[in-house]
Image (cartoon, rainbow, N blue to C red; front, side, top):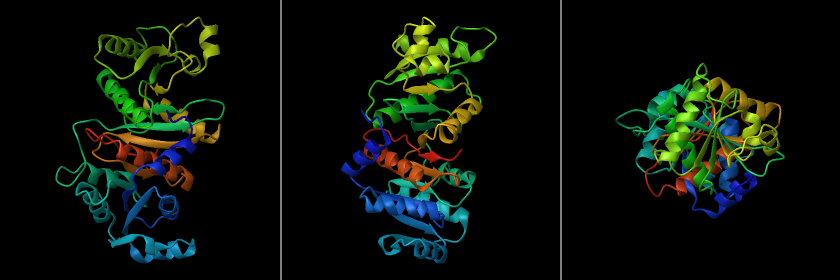
Length: 313
């Protein structure tokens, strides 16, 4: 089981390299990340966008652009559609967002004629490596589903379980995070947590161990769980943190980045192929981490293809 981001990179280097189709590739951080992935033997890339700008950025940053194929496309909408088509046709196995609004590339992803949509919902999983912990945490949903209902939360857990398994965690522990540890009829998140636990116990939600409601402290800290008298295999040992709403997930994610200086990558699950969507605030190393996870997931696509990578929140 992969427990640290360095292991993600090392494991990706042992897998078959994949090709990334970058939509609107004239972005320096994206080019640096793609170049690093190429140099590490993780992935090749097809760069779709303004060729003049791409070449200038490469020259300014000592990137040998001759290693990559460039597809000239100056219109952002057309560039996204072209990149999506490259993946849909199998010429690339991973899609990556460059200097373009997320809504534009997602519109191409979800296009019924050329896109990568499935019957699955799209949900976001933030993969975090935090100092002092012996495992990765999977925070969901920090970017896609605003206020998920019970059935949506079930699918969000299933998506996160697929991501954890792609990184070697075959039976992840899921904590349904709420403000309290007891079911409260006035707090819908606690009611959903109790129902999700029942689904797990009845075999309707498989491949993981689900517990809840749990507060964040007793989900990740054994000491906190013991102090509150909570006896559960998930308490203090959670891998997947199911958040009650997007505000909670987004705040936790950004707190890890800016307060705890944790390492981060993100995954939006639900498309036919991995899609790396990078935020302008992300470093090239965060983008590289996301690419590496995308490569692992692409290599793990033995059955239905579910995955979509993101660091855009």
